[in-house]
Length: 205
Image (tube, rainbow, N blue to C red; front, side, top):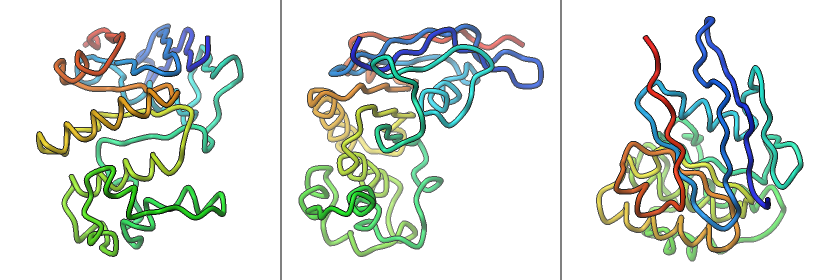
């Protein structure tokens, strides 16, 4: 299978299994959903998929090769302020992946594509709303051109208009060949975007 595959993922905290033998197949070219109650391990699963956390058991591969935290994986977080450098402008946040590759990128064009007003590109995270900052993060995802996009409640900070823009963009990223994994509590969003969804069991205790 071309795409992301997790097999037998088990993660324990304090002797309690947060994830217990979880299997997930996320083919390239589609959006795969992950749902579950609070505490069911959705964010932990994303961290494992991103290579940021080593599971107690199981493995994650992309098209047969082990996954590591590299530029081939992009993470769109629920709380953008936790992942953005407050000393960087929105323009620099969007352009960062291209700067790492020593490439030039049309930041204004990307801002327009994600519904961010270009006049905001010189502002810092503390000078914009959560929704505007999330759009900048989505712009950074486009600049990164990753093979895998992991989304943790990406529309939680957005109004309905911005949510529609993000969902359209996620469809486009998948159509361009990326494997997109979407974590969400919103059944409407999952139904509208995903070809298949993994429902994590309710946590015990």
